[in-house]
Every structure is written in structure tokens, then in C-alpha cells.
Length: 372
Ligand SMILES: *Cc1c(COP(=O)(O)O)cnc(C)c1O
Image 1 (spheres, helix red, strand yellow):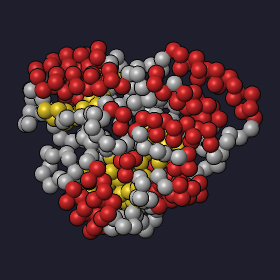
Image 2: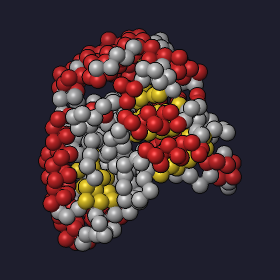
Image 3: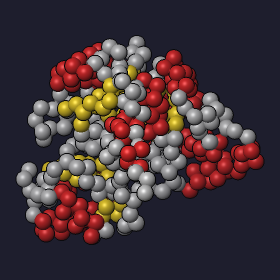
């Protein structure tokens, strides 16, 4: 038998792949998808768009996806009030691919990427996948606080002098948004770094939460990533994007595979962007469902972290792993993110949130609650 572990790149040996379970359960609230199907008018527009491009599928797609970049720049400009040009926008098959392009271009062997844990588990996986050394920074000196302590972040950035810094706002899995002062302080403390702010959940932030897009003018090492997977209810399409300095985005063409966005992906994403208002129409309802989830968990004696996203990190479980299993036994799949006494729960439809709260009540009777 071949010893593939021995053949594997040494820095990958013993690693674990991304592995959120994909189970067929009545209430799947573990990957922060939208629970709301794509609305009928948009389904029709998508079908028509695919029909239009289908005869041309014998040809490669537009390698520079100009029309899509223009539409994404327009979407960002309209929804955030920041003026974003087409040349600033880059896209990939999910923001995961866009993040990979960034570390392929600016990280890699002999280079350092720094993030502040707990945060999105893919930041270290993508960084290490291209040979970048990953440094797990601390968010706050006390283990039960999830906000980033700006002074502590600045000190860690100065100590490690990274090539890439990952920030995430609102942060997954904690749900908390960053203050812009934290972003600028980290940016100023990392003079040779590309500073990435992952804003996958920006559309769910509570009013008055500014986007890091507002910081782009005059900061050419700053990158803001977004995705159509969450608020846009389009996770199955795989379309993520970023906004940054035009010269930076230009360099990402060195590492992307040619024609990485298929003609079908481009057409479908464009059709959905044309119906952006309809695609986003569920966001307010999801925010209400999130707030109901926070209130319901509080009533149950749990300890939910305030959230600017479409999910809630809930503390107060005596044994998070046992409660995860007991919820699953009741048809409710949530996420064990590996934080003791915590589970992460996506805000689905109001009905799903009620099912989650009902299942939680039964589970807490069974397991008792914890150690808050
Ligand atoms: C879900 C998520 C993404 C989205 O990834 P896609 O590849 O665009 O689906 C990116 N960043 C964070 C923090 C996420 O939670």
C-alpha cells in the first residue's frame, strides 16, 4: 500500500479539511445559508440568462468578466454609498477563491498570514494551502470575550510583521462587527501587509455599522471581500468578490486560472444582480429572526453573543458537543465551532428559529445548562 501521508507535502500532513456536515435534516442551520429559496421572478430571469448563453458554451467565457465586474461595482456603490469602480473589483467562485487568490499572490512559502481567533476557519486553511505560515492571533486577553482588543491586535501585528492580515466583520463565528478604528489601527501597524476585511455578512449588520469599503480611499493595501452566498441567498452559485486598489486587483490575474468564472456563472450572477432588491428582500426578515433567536436563547437562560450577522453564537451549554447531538436527534443541525460551551446557530425562517428554540428547551431539560 502506498503511504500517501509520506508523499504528501510535509506542511499538509495531519491537517483536517473544511468539514461542516451536509446532512438531510428538517432544520439545517449550520452553514449560514439563506433558508429562503430564490424568488420565482429571479428563477425565471436566471433560466432565461442560461438559455441566452447556452449556444455560446462552445467558446471560453469572458476571461476578464467585464460585465459582471461592472455590475458588482454598481451593487457596492448603490448599497454602501461608496464609489467603487469596475477596475477595483475582482471576483471568483466564492469569496473563498478570492481569498485564495490573495494569499497566492501576497502570501506563500516563507511568508506570514495573521488572523485573530476565533474567526473564519477557512482563513488559516486557505493560507496554509498555498504554503503560507499561519499565526493565530488573540482577539482579547480574557478567553470569554470575543471583541478584538485594538491595542492587543496592534501589538501582535507589530510583533509578527505579517504579509497578510485577516480581519472579519461581522466576525464568523462570533457575529460581532469591528469598529473602523480597529481596522485602521491594524492597517497602520502592518506597513508591509495586505489587510483583508472579510465582510461576508455585511448586509446583516445593525444600522450604523459602517463598511470597511469607506476606508479604501488612500489605503491601497486594504482589501474588502464580499459574497453572494449569504444575504444574496446564492450560496449554490459560488460567487464572491472583492474591492481594492486597481493595481492590486490587476495582479490577481497572475494567479487565477484562465477563464475561472464560467459563462454560466457570469450570466446567472448578472441576472441575480439585476434583481438585487428582490434577492435582498428577505434580509430584514432574517435579521428579525436573528433577534428572535437571541431573545429566545436569553429567555432559556443561555448566553447569546450580540450579532450583526445571520447567525448567533450561543454560550451557556454545559457540554456543547452533547447538546449538538441532542439537537440533531430532534432534527436540528447547528454548528459546533469547537468553542467550549458554545454552539453557532444560523437564523433561518421564523418558523425554523421557533423549531430551534423548542428543540433547545427540550435539550436543556435533558443536559442541563452550564457554566456561563
Ligand atoms: C460564508 C463565509 C464566506 C463565504 O464564502 P463563499 O466562498 O463566498 O461561499 C466567506 N467568509 C466568511 C467569514 C464566511 O462565513
